[in-house]
Amino acid sequence: MSKELQDLLDLLDLERVEEDIFRGVSRPSLVPRVFGGQVAAQALVAAGRTVPANRPAHSLHAYFLRPGDPGVPIVYTVDRIRDGRSFTTRRVVAVQHGQPIFHLSASFQTYEEGLDHQFPMPAAPDPETLPTAAEALPRDLPPDVAKRLIEARAAVDLRYVDAPPWGTVGVPREPHSQVWFRTNGKLGGADAGSLLHVCLATYVSDMTLLDSVLLAHGRGGWAVGDVVGASLDHAMWFHRPFRADEWLLYDQESPSSGGGRGLGQGRIWTADGRLAVTVIQEGVVRVPRG
Image (cartoon, rainbow, N blue to C red; front, side):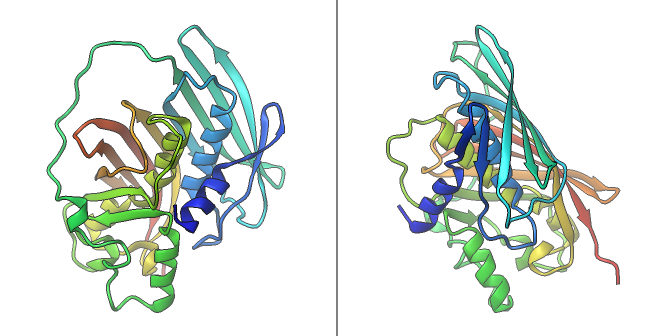
C-alpha cells in the first residue's frame, strides 16, 4: 500500500465523538476549500458506522452548501431517520464554524434477490496500456500546477482514455470522457461492496465527473484557470458489489450546461463488465470575468 493511500484511509477513519457524532480532518487542498469528494466520503463513513454491516449502502443524495475550510475539523452529526426490516435511512449534516457545509441522505439495504439487468459496458482500452495521470500531463503545464495535479491523485491510479480537459484547451470535443481508476495499493480484509470500497468510490467520483462539461467548450478548468467551478449536488446509486482496489471504468458525459451550471452523469463498471455505480452531479461552471 502506498503512503498516499494510507493517508487517504486515515482521512476516512473518523473519530467518534459521541454515539452519532463524528469528527474528521482534511488533507491539503488544491484550492482554498475542502475537496467535495472528501466531504461526501466522510459523511457516508459516518452514516455507515451507525448501520449494521450486513446492510450495504445502495444510494446517496447530497448537497454542498458552503465551501469547507481545510484548516478546521469537520463535525458530522448522524440522524437515524429509519430502521426498517429491509432498508435503513440516515441523514448526515457536516458542520464547520457553527454552520452546515454539507448535507447527505443515504439509504442502506439488506441483500435480496430480484430482477436483474444492465446496460452493456462501453468499449474502452485495457487500462494497463494507458499512461498514468502523471505520465499524461502536458509538458507545457506550469510546474506548480503539474505538481498539484499529481499530489491530488497520488492515492488513486487514475488513467484517462483520452486527453483530459487541460490537455486540449481551446479545442471543443464531444462531452464524453472515460477514466480507469483503482486505489494505489491493495486493500486487505475489506470485502467487495463493503463500506470502505463504497466510500473510496464516492471520493473518486467527484474528481472527474464535470470534465465532460469542460470538454464541450474547450476549457481546461481550474488547472489552467479558465473556469471557476464547485460541486452543487451529488447522487450515487450502488448497483453491484465492487472493489476499489481493482480496475473500474468511469464512463462520463454531460447532457447539458447553462445558467452558470453544468450537469455530469457517469457510470462505473467493473473490469469484467458489471455495472457497479451510477453517478449524477451538477456543479457551478463559470467563466471568470476580465
